[in-house]
Length: 102
Figure 1 (tube, one colour):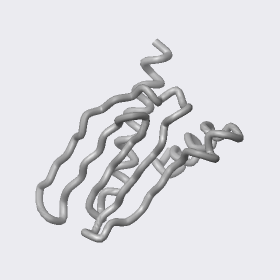
Figure 2 (spheres, rainbow, N blue to C red):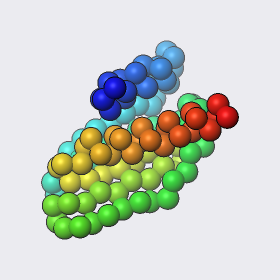
Figure 3 (tube, helix red, strand yellow):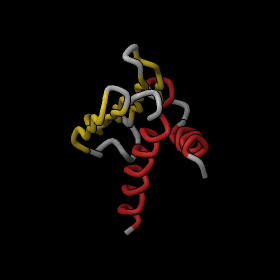
């Protein structure tokens, strides 16, 4: 399943009539240029995930950074990194799901 389809299913699973009123998924563009992704995890089984800021800057046109902190996934990246950023979110969420099943 591609990452967009996965995110759609993940989002739908979180929606309980209340969560989506105050929380959600924001994907925006930045002026440097690049993408910014913010996914709120408050009120989900994932709110306790903590991942320190992880970043890589290879050039002015090849960079990214992301973290899970205070029940929020925050990520930024160059214009080619949207799929990559969403895949990082997916990897961490799926790792927690696997750990919780063990």
